Length: 178
Image (cartoon, rainbow, N blue to C red; front, side, top):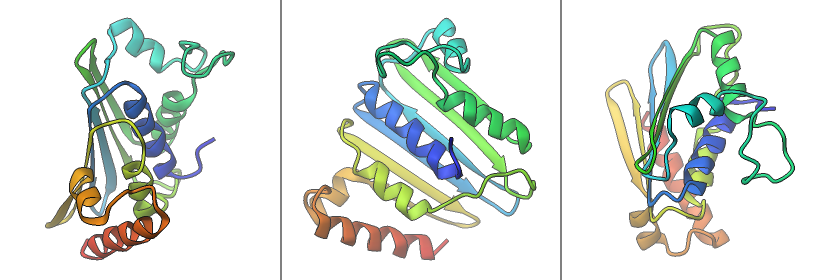
């Protein structure tokens, strides 16, 4: 079960990375009323039937997790959004990629806690798979963009502990501006 909103985001970005995407984009837009996320990729995509099944908790393709008879990531997200007055939009085209947008009303008493945004960004930036990952963050009039290729060029291998410490500090410094 996901306890924080960032847990949902990590799960969705991981799905994008595992879908054969060469580019994954994460957008985070926050204001006084809520926080929204958009995850887009240019991976394998889904047809209309696969999209409907992705939201069904009792269906899984059996490939990603052999032996598992349920797929709960998106259904749990959908449930959390419904309970807290949020909304979800799933768009996908077979062979072209997927875009998932969702927004939580953080004023709602049933909204899960957001969690550690800095830790989430560091985690997804270190995921294997896509050749490029972009994270755009906006709050009020301030925004910044993290580009995995530029960070790796400046810091080195993002799997090394010393570089992860520097990455975390850099993301934290950007987040202090919002």
